[in-house]
Structures are given as C-alpha cells and as structure tokens.
Image 1 (cartoon, helix red, strand yellow):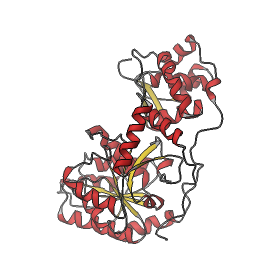
Image 2: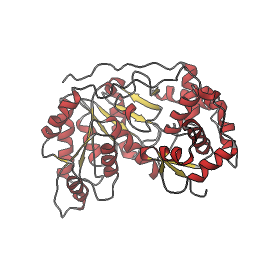
Image 3: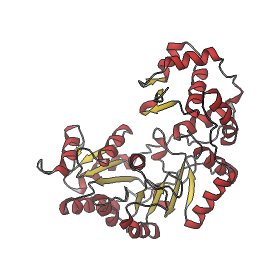
Image 4: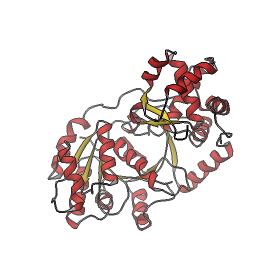
Length: 381
C-alpha cells in the first residue's frame, strides 16, 4: 500500500461561503445534522441564516434565536489564522473521505499541522488513561507498525494508551482529535506532545470553536471523530465504562472494524476489551493482525460517494404547512425516539411538510435527534 492515497475530489468553498458556513454551525440549535438539512432545504448557508428567525418562531421558540454574526465568524477565522490553523468544509478536497460518510459528520473542522495526512487511510488506537506498562508498550507497537505500513494513527491525546500511540507514530503521521478548541488541548501535560505532532508529520483536528474548553459531554464527540476517520479502531485496555468503548461502539455503527486486545479477567482495565471480544470484536495479539485485517479495505475506494456541496436549487419556495398540519406532526412526537418515515405514515402528510416542521422544531430547540435518524420531543415539551 502506498503511504498516501489518491487525493480526493472536492469543491473548495469561497471565502463568502466559508463565513456563512461558520456562522450557521455556530448559531443556536444548529448541529451537524440540522446544518445538513438546512443546506438541503434552503440551498445555501446564507439563505438558511436568513430563514432561522422565522423557522424558530414557527417551531414555538420562547426566545429569539442567537445567530452568529459575520464579525464573530471573521474573528474566529482570524484567531485560526494566527494560531496556524484553518477550517475545512465537508465538501472540500482536504476533508477526510471516511469522516464525511458518517451520520452527523461535522460540516467544518479546524485543523493544524500536516494536512496531507488526511489523505491517507487511518487506524484509531485508543484505551485506558491509567494504562499498564505492557498495555502502553503494545499500543505503541500497533501504532508504530501501522504507521510504517502507511496508515495514519488517530487517537485522542489522552493520557496512557493515547499518548503511547501518538508518540510511537510521530515519525510516520498521527492525528490528535480534540474535545475542545484547537487552542484548548487536554490534558495540559500533553501540550508539548501536541506541539510535536503539529510541527512534525502530524495534525490536530477539532469541530469545536476556538476558545472552547472541553467538558465531559464533549469527549463523545471527539470519540466520533476518531471512529469516523478510521477504517478500524484498536482498543488496548478499557474499563467497562470508558470513552474507549464509546469509540468502539461508534466505529461499529459506522461499519468500521473493531479490534480488541485480550487481557486478564482480574485486571479492571481489561474488562472492557474482553467484553468487546465477547460481542464480536476481532482479537489482536500482534500489530500484524490489524494490518492484515485492514489491508483489503485500504485498497478499495470505500468512500467514493459524491462530495457534499451547496445544491444549485433552492427548496425554500415550498409553502410552510398550516397550523393544523404542524399540530398533527407535533402530536405524533413524544419522548420516545421514532423514525421520521413512521411520522410521515402516521400523519399522512407529504414528506416535505414533515421534514420542514421537524426542522422548525429543531431550530426552536424542541426536537432531540438520535442515532439512526430518529427524533423525539425535547425534554420539557
């Protein structure tokens, strides 16, 4: 396998589009899935921004929606520039091919370092923060050998296994996925390591705003980046309740390979990995196990779907549903997640009308999105 895969195709955003995209994803109640629906419906981020106040009002919002201003977007772009970073949109050539295929892929990612590493197939290596000596050594072996085989090694910059994986792949290429902004790495003791990564053959990546300090709920989003970028994820030591198991679960949901290192049943750090093996993860006892399993996948063009871009059409000409239709859709929802197709069948309304009302509820903060495209009413409704 060559060390670098063919450069993916894509369409670069104009400066004006990049500002509008950044404003839209930084506005209230707009996550990756909502961003995609808004672009699909209104045709552009600029048109979606103009429609947000009306959508929010029709969805029953109790206060005015906060929309990121052009000044705020320009300021964040300038902060990124001074920091030596830049933003990459989901349809642009440098956006990771594997990541753009997952459900809820971030529309914009901030990156700093050697962007060419994003064109290579990647493997995730994650595990316990309080790793054993043998666990850290084995993680380093996996990262070093996979790097020499041409893979980028992706991990989360955490203590223990993550640190060992990053250090072992500094010379071949490693990606540090952050839970906070690029300027807010965690933990503090790994700041020198992150600098080595960004100044060498590695890269830091985040979907969070500059200045954002990571909170507990941000780490699963970081784990989603690791799983989404990788062809497979190797878990080396993990307790029964750990972020590494979240990464493994997400990797399985994305159709990626999940590897686990067996360990002593008496070691709490191995209970999670042993559980993964019971659930069907691939057992690995050497780095070659990972390389051999990934080899067929790395030779295939698995992520050749058309790249995302702002559509030429504009769906905003669709007349909004009337109040009775809106009430029927809201009444069909509850705290239990349901599939959107079931809402369409239950109400008998056109799919376009249902999607538009769900978008209104979403922007108003009254809709909760779940994996697999399911939705429910937000708590309190």
